[in-house]
Length: 251
Length: 315
Figure 1 (cartoon, each protein chain N blue to C red):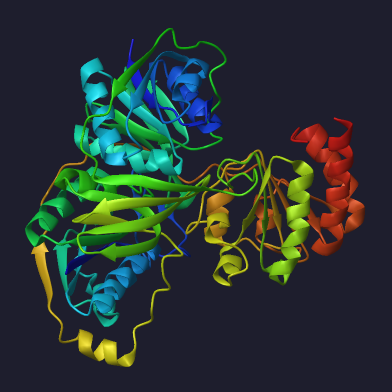
Figure 2: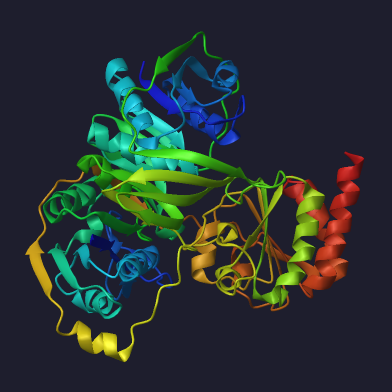
C-alpha cells in the first residue's frame, strides 16, 4: 500500500507570538518550530498501517521551508521510508486553499491509497486542508478520526462529534485527518535516527498559488480587563458568588 | 440583498443553538438566509430557524459529507449566493472545506466576527488558538466560513416563509453508518455556557468528582481539563481545553488547579468571565481571571457548589 503522511512545520505550542510592524504578519524572528501536534499522530498512523500490512511504503510530504529538513529527518527516523519537501519559505503565509491545491497536485502524481494528515495544523487552525485536498482529487475524506480499521479497498473510521461517536465507512483512496486518541506517537530511537540518514529526502519547488485570503489586520488579542483576587479560602466563596451575580451577571 | 446559505443542524426537530447563532451572524452582517437542513426531523426543525427567510430540506438515504457538500455547492451556484456558513461544530467544520473546494474558494474556520465592509465580507478569527486575532477579507467569489460557538447571538425574529425538499443526488464516497449518542445530556465544552476545568492541582482522577458536582449544580455546565490531565489519562481528550484541544468561549469559565500555561490560556481567554481557583497566588491563570480565589480547591469548590445549588433552587 502506498501511504502518504502530510506534515506541517508550525511554531511550538509554547511559543509566544509577536505581530510584525505594520500589523499584517507574524514576527517570525526567533520562533521555534515543531511538526504540528496532530501531524505526529498522522505520521504514526501511516507507519502503523504499513507495519500492520507488512508491506507498502510511507512517504512524508510537506510544504515548508528549505531549512526545515531537521524536522523532516525526524519523521524518517520515526519510520517513514522517504520524504518530499515542496519548498516555500513563505509556507506559513499561504491560505488553506493555496496549501490544499499545491498538495493535491502533488498527491495526484504520487497516487497514494491513503493519505494521513493531522486534524488541524496548530498555526492557522483551519482544519480545512485535508477535506479540501480530498475534494479537489475526488477522493473520500474522514476528518478527526479516533479509530481506524481497513479491509481491502475500504475502511471504517470512528469520529467524535459534540453529541457522540459516529462510525463512518469509506472507500480508498482516502484522506484521513487524525485526532488525539487514535494512537500514541513513538519517539525516534537511535536505530531509527541512524537509518534516517540514508533515507531519500527529495526537494522540489512548491507550485505558486495565489492566496484568496487577504490580511486586513493581525493583532494580539485585546488585553482582558484587570481582574482581582476576591479573597483567600472558603471565606471568599460568598464574595465570588456576589461578583458573579451582580457584576458579571452570569449566575 | 446578499444571499447566504446556512447549514443548520438540529436535534430531532429542534434547531441547535450553534446553528441559530450562525444564522444570527449572517443576518447581522446584512444577508438574507436560506437555511439548509437534513436528516430525520429536518421538516419539523426548518420552520423554527429564527432569522432565515427560506429553508430547504436536503433528502438522502443517510448522511454523506461529500454528497451533501455537492448539493450545498450546487445550491450556492443556483442561487448566486455570496456566502455559505455553518457553525464550527464537528459537522460544520467537516462540511465547509468540502463546499469551499467545490467552489474553489478559501474557507475561514471558527470565526468570531463577521461584517461587511464596502459590500465585501470580512471575518475575524483566532490564529494559533487565539494567541493572535486576524481580520481577513477574501478575493474568492463566495465567502465560506464556520462560526465559533457562543460567539454570536441568534436572530431575534423572522422564520422561513417556505420549506422545500431537494434530493441529494451525488454518489457518496463516505457515509455515516452508525451513531452512538453520548450518555445523558452532558454538553460538549465547546457549546456549554459554563465550563469548569481542572488541572494538575486536582491531584488525581477521582477528585474530578468535585468539578462534576459543581457542573451538575449549574445544570448547563461542561467539565473540561488541561493538557497535563488528558495526557495523564485522567480525562478524555474531548474535554481538553487549549491549543491541542478545544478552544472555548463560554459565558463563564472556572479554572480549578490550573496554573495557566500559554497553550491553555490561548484556548479559553475569549471566555466572557473567567474565575480562577488556585493555591499558588502567583499562578499565571490569575493574570487572565476576572475573579480569583487563592486557596485549597477541595474546600473552596464544594462550598461554591453548595452556594450555586442554593441559588438555582430559588430560581
